[in-house]
Length: 161
Image 1 (cartoon, rainbow, N blue to C red):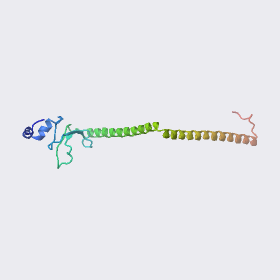
Image 2 (cartoon, rainbow, N blue to C red):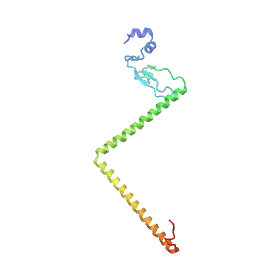
Image 3 (cartoon, one colour):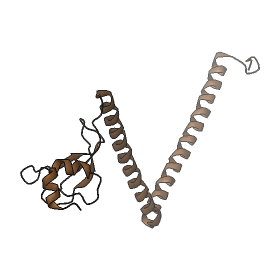
Image 4 (cartoon, rainbow, N blue to C red):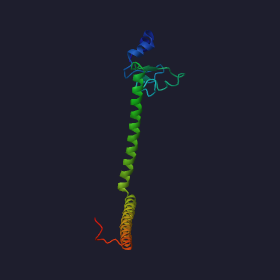
């Protein structure tokens, strides 16, 4: 690390700019300057370094952009959209992982498996009952039609299929 006398003679800001990529970079309060990425609309995805206390300006004012500013609003909007899409993808991934975790737990839980099996049995029974109702209704309508034909005097031989 550069000696403290050297930092004072060259000016702290100039020294920090020259050493901004150094792992040993420390702020004025001698805390390590952490690498971070901006996630705000005005400076999306810009890399910076700052003291752990950089938001508390009374304690430390060390904050240093590592990337140049984005050239115009188009780039800022594009990067912000990219950031929001990435956040949404991460949220969807987290949701998917939760569903996967629950399904894995369900695989190992006999009570959950029995519950699912019972629900499937009930659903299958309801489908069979519906099929029976449809068949009975079809037969009933056929009988009504035949009765109608008999009353009206239409012979089935006369009906062209």
